[in-house]
Length: 245
Length: 99
Image (cartoon, rainbow over all chains, first blue to last red; front, side, top):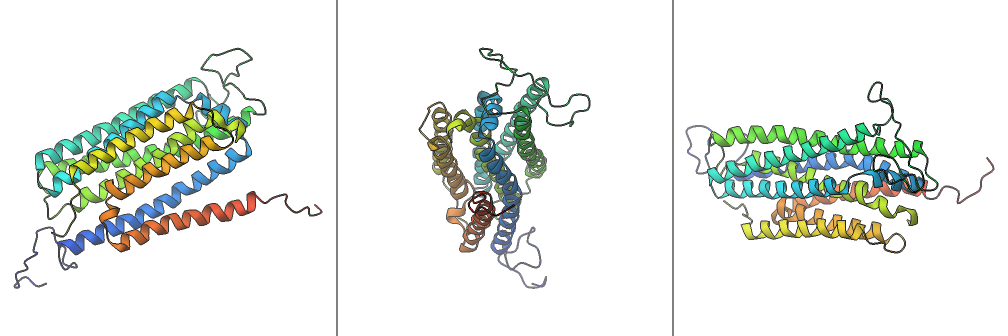
């Protein structure tokens, strides 16, 4: 479209290679979905590793899983779901052109994301204290939790179910840290993206016609939420019953 | 504007459904179901929650066919990943070959 022909769909954010804002938005959303499919493939490999080793060492997975803090895990699940909700509301307020609420929702989403990371950091620190960081990832503090004996209910010790070995428990923690670590990395990237959205939102860049960045980063945020929806039961909860399948 | 705007009431409903789902999955984890039923219950709840997020929070229900195809392709490739890998692992030892 050359500059002399006025375009009824003209908008300052419209790129020259798109016919109109709707086409531009559709293309952006589609591109994000393709990216999210590749992301699912990426996480899929880790879910596959988890499933395989869980089938191979059920007793060890149950022992290790029982050591995770269900309360903190459930709290983080609720925090993430709430943040997904505020993200969806941020998209809504952008679509209806309420800039102030849009800023508030983006800020809430960012704060909830940071809360999640804070709780995760506390969990990692607990695992560090109990010497559950696998291998020699931490110099001078290799994997070596204390093993609880019969009748000992110290929560800082690993309670090995019959048939489980410490080496197998260590394998669970490799998978645990790989999966939750990758998830946390995605949350950190998401928090960065939200900061960017917040700055542009404060500048009033988004309106009902143009809000692809909010929509697309929203998709990413929900995707990260979905990964956690699966990680929480698989890592924290299922261990309780693995002894019988 | 042909973009579909999802009403607030839908978002609130989905949010509550997700919270209830989380509470259910935690509650179910403390009940000892027979056999592999605990896993099946937990995964059913997780898949349901994820479906709600995809359909409503991620607007797929209101999106074009092309987006549907891409979402379906994700599930399709995941199915290949799991099916082919487990067709190996789960069938090991079915045949006794001499080594």
